[in-house]
Image (cartoon, rainbow, N blue to C red; front, side):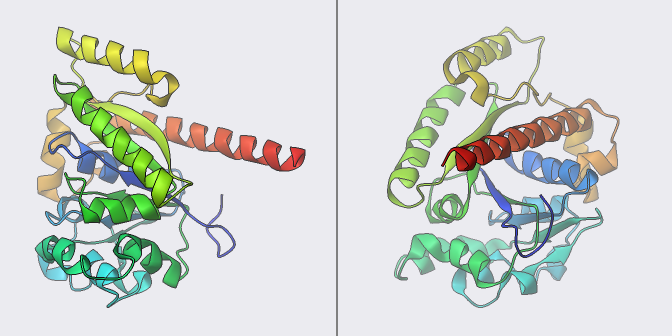
Length: 274
């Protein structure tokens, strides 16, 4: 896929209603890994905490036009986009103002389609758009799901993970059935993986046993260097590209691109048959 006006970008929502599962870390570092292989990538920070913006080096005083303005119809994507220190990687930042958007959008017509409309209103010349969602299944996440082609789910290897995952899957199914018939689950990625922990092994066995090939082979380990990176305003791949976490995200990006190539090949076959 090349970055031109004829090619619609592939849009992924990075979603999990539980906080602290590595959602923002996955968004930032997967985006960085994709940019490293010459993909043009846009991150849309849709979390009022603005952690993805911070992790990509966008200080709070530089966030004048944000994802809030997109949802409110006060700006178009090209006005909100900022360059990051990573070549080919751009971001629409977020501030705490976004927390009020859930309430403000309630009375708006087609409130679930605000982000989709914003992306459609101006040409988005990227290969991939990654939307970092808040840790909830409210109206912000709903806007992300309606605007997306696929969902990528970071899943922490801990006891309550499967319970939350089943709820999220039901939400995706509801969105597909009522608001976005094209939405699919691109993959589930296991995060905070600790191979020394028997519970981690059990969670992995259960998730792979039920979801089969939907689960990525690549797993994201617990890693101190990865935790340090955001405080320096850098993705882990820039902060320390040789650490275990960075290597895991490079592997994840490679696996994602392989899935994308396979998807495209299957679509071409279907068109040929038709």
